[in-house]
Image (cartoon, rainbow, N blue to C red; front, side, top):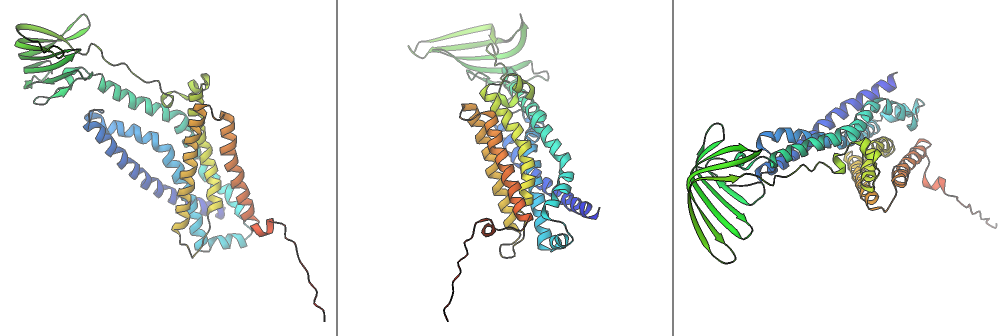
Length: 368
């Protein structure tokens, strides 16, 4: 049918352009943030693109939802401005008739949004956290670059080597500064080599000296050695992949704690919000020459920001026990759906608030 095909074609072009623009903006911001994390040592510089990819995946749900909302508002507003809507209205197509082709266009995108929110979101968060934990748990020698001072994973040691071998297991002119309780020690050696004994990594230092100072008493002791072994990362960190945002959807359902219910409401809310925004986009779209075409895009962005923030606030409310899981879904998303449907019905029948309010007619007679 010409009506359906023409509308879906316009929506496809607008949706594709919007996704490209929003994805570019998000990727730029994520890249800047990831490079900042790599600079401070929280992300492996060689894995910046991988971390950025997982971060963009976690934002893809929001990108698709906002793109779908903007493309509907911009496409229908353009049709109003170009008098195309007038042609369809005069041919017997009311505003409600646009809902069917819009949903026929959007249903694959809605399925992708649901899959991203329920499956990809926790998976991408876990992968990004695993990369960060793996980089944080690397041993101290792997952190050291020749000619640079580098702090250890626990923050208790500072390493420096003049140069190392290609296998990163042997270094020359090694300097280690460590703090253990009240003892501050400075160890220097002509050579250092990594060895593994009883499952522990050891740094075997040769031909050096160690200066130990008691920070409380000020006592200083100097020891020269030919062979000295130093344990590397005895208190390595353990993985912390246990947050609700990294928990699978099925585990959230099996363990319905308040925080898990808040996370589940947030994920389901993204899919419900995408549907409601389709209806809101149909209701919001109109043309007013006095305000310009950008007015409705700005209004759409404002509606999206308010709705998205309410979803985030609802997640925290459920986590703190202020509202129930079902109460938030019915109150927020159900209320928005009812309001959008009423808005569409009012515009479909060309009603105004004056017609909906009871009006009392006053008649007067004039005496001749």
